[in-house]
Image (cartoon, rainbow, N blue to C red; front, top):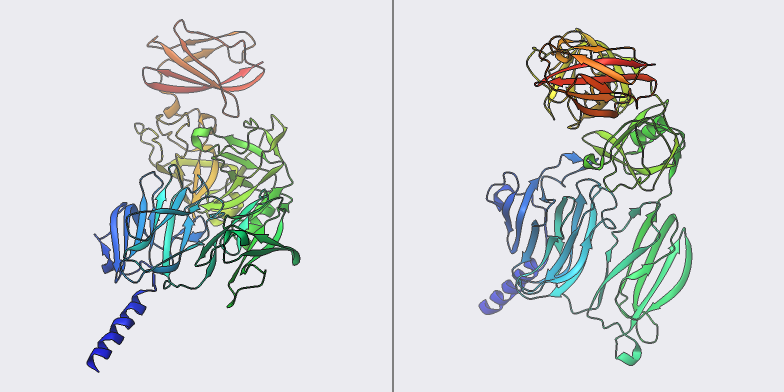
Amino acid sequence: MKKLYTLLLSLSSILIFSQGSINFDTDVNWSPAPSGYGNYTYTDGVFTATGVDVLRNGTAAQDGFPGAFDTYSVRLRNNGTTSLTMLVSTGGIGNYSFQVRRWDGAPDTNFAVETTTDGTTWTPASTINASVTTDSDWKTVNGTINSANANVGVRIVSLGTTERIMVDNFTWTSPSTNPSLLISSPSDATVYSPVTTSVNVALSISNFNVALPAGGGDGHIHYQVTKDAVPQGVVMKYDTAPIALTGLTPGSYSVYVELVDNSHNPIAPAVNATVTFVISSYTVVANLAALRADVIANGAGKYYQVSSNPVITYARSSTYRNQKYIQDTSAGILIDDVPGTISTAMVNGDAISGLRGQTSLFSGVLQLLPLENATVASSGNTVTPQVVTIADITGNIEIYESELVQLNAVSFVEADGSTPFATSTNYTLDDTANTLAFRTSFAEANYIGSLIPSGSQNVVVLVAEFNGTAQVTARNVVDMPLETRAFNTIDGLTMYPNPSNGNTLYFTTSANAELDIQVFDVLGKQIINSKVLNNALNISNLNQGIYIVKVTEEGKTATRKLVVK
């Protein structure tokens, strides 16, 4: 009797350890205690996860979705060396699944999922890429190993340039000798963008030889696609390669897959699986205010087509994610375009036609990620900044976010006559009643390194936020106060004739040293960048209008407004 009890206990242990679920939430299971990116292990019974260059991630939202279920997840870094290896030492693995989500939408995720039956040799299983992480919400990745060996597991490895991903809730079932069928991708209820025309349905099949009858197979596969509740014909498939669906259009799809014998009858007991997905349509909005209202009501991640022609108030280069601040008469928004999807050359003052993209949130800022190229409807448009107060902005950030506005009679608290603007730094604007963060968000701004202007003045700014706290920034020296000590530090500087209707502009200074001259139009575009040795600058290429002239001599800077007639 004692021997029988021991045998039953052993069998019970095998059953317990041959299936499980890991949520990474127990502090004492982490080694060493996590602090930033590093190499960590998480051990729980027969399960061990080994992370290389990973981070223990919390639940704080990023890009509109929580960073973990319950307490923690594992974040894999955005480089080529990060990895996460998850092994079950005894009992083996039948099916496995885990939850994954991307950090945000750029660049695309790029990871391989591999499996092992001995802890040493790895076999490719699937890929975590843009077709899996279609937005920043959590997705399910699953597969089949069906091995009772020791050290069976799954490894996630970076394939190079990639966005960060979070991994949570790894589960596994016991190995089985029965036939099994699993749809490993896409995740059920995946939502694809409107430009999607093809989807691969990947299958994971074990203990069943799929082949032509002449090939000695156990049987084959039947699958049926249903679009918008209308079934299509049953298709016979004699291999386990992904089901390639092409020519797709927006709508709701389901794919039913089953194993059948060589006589086309479902095997007994039945083995089948179903996956659903949606190819989105664009939500057409009249203007940017309507887009913002829909996101507030329904959340970020949807796809929009903007009917208005917003004007670019500030366009950044590819070094800075091809970002474009745009606004129409109703509202503003930030375009974030890392891939350069909008290939049409665009500059400040251009009105954009045919804008289509997906919304996302970055540190609370609503962004539009373009999905298709857009065109220029017109050029040379001027946006007149709306005059607002600090209280207006802080009282309702959403109304003004990404808009170009003007603040009157404000001063920089940090202005002391000797402190220059530094990049990625917060300063404080004060209108005697309220304060507001002024952040030097643009490293390319030509006031970086210049002294913070003193005194009360009017400034033109773009409105942003950081997780609910309002911020503003200026695009260039055109937006900043001009006739203050901070921009008038060159002794004896004169510039003439002004207004000018000739081809030459003259300068004099007390030091009479070499001058660096930059000339900007009213949109902040640099027109001239020249060194002046003889006190004369050729301005014959300037059209009639108003310009800002920035003069630098021996490290000191001054600006002047120039009128060309």
